Image 1 (spheres, rainbow, N blue to C red):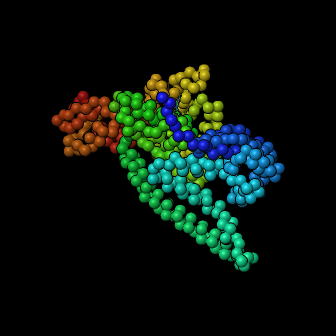
Image 2: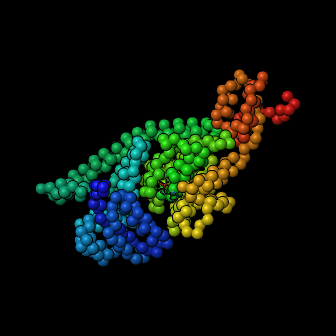
Image 3: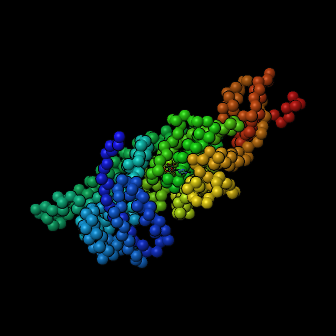
Length: 431
Ligand SMILES: Nc1nc2c(ncn2[C@@H]2O[C@H](COP(=O)(O)OP(=O)(O)OP(=O)(O)O)[C@@H](O)[C@H]2O)c(=O)[nH]1
Ligand SMILES: [Mg+2]
């Protein structure tokens, strides 16, 4: 029997952009179409204007504005999605001239984020970014009552302005309110990250472009040793911005080594400044990392652009000078690409292939545990708590309970070595 499915008509839109010889123009237009789809809309037409510079007044030159209006009317389309962020007055002028709705790239990305936000933190972050975007865009002309009155003239202008001020104040107050609320949520996140800092486990962070396969890689590593319980898995899906929050999981390997692995929000070109600002805490999570794994979809012909965007965004939020592995994922989808293979800091792999994950884990171990030293510790029973901590968090190779205390052989990080210095046994044989 055929399954009956409810189908919704998607809103059809035109995507449009001005090309003034930007090298990545084609790529950003294709991505704009993908963002449109991610927002549950459908691209009916694409319109491009080639000029030397964009028009200050209407973004497009005037002939193009008329052409857009004609095509939209002929195809019964009401919404035009633009490849750049426009000024509030450019959007107003375009809408006034055509009677159509213009949505710029920033508003589109904000909508996608807004639809995807699940947790309290992500919801607050998106709403703040949306309000900041709206703030300079509200104007009295939106409400005809603000513009016209029996008295008309200048007296009315004053009335309109004060209404505008009032609206803006309401928005500003709401932003303050949401920011305070976010601070309380941020504090919990901060406590979590501090708790992580207190453990001696190294933190490895997956970063990279949206849809590159970060969450799939995280799940692959979680599954690596044992079929991990379903609830430790993170959400992975073929959609832009499937992940908007940071998840951290402890990975315990067979040789007793452990590390923390984090998965977070992905990047996209021209990520709106307000969003970057609002998501700063989430994005800066990578700052705590001992190692970054930049996941790249190598089967996408634009992978080089994606690396550029990722590195630019990381720099923008202050994540710099971190050791990094370039993890070229989805090698299975690239004809002729051999995998898994490692060349220096680069790995070619597929997040859905067990051998690949094994190689990736090997590379992570090599990098994060490079400065670890095999050490013997003798911890007296009076310091039992510390012994328990070592047994829980360090890479323990052997343990023995002697008359003098717990004798633990472990691979220790330079920080651990310093911390447990007084328990280090240099020559046990003589004891
Ligand atoms: N064939 C193939 N598909 C993959 C591979 N890695 C990931 N995918 C698919 O790519 C899509 C995106 O994967 P995710 O892991 O959700 O990507 P992400 O980087 O977490 O994306 P965001 O959370 O949106 O930033 C999913 O449909 C995955 O099944 C791979 O190595 N090979
Ligand atoms: Mg994800």
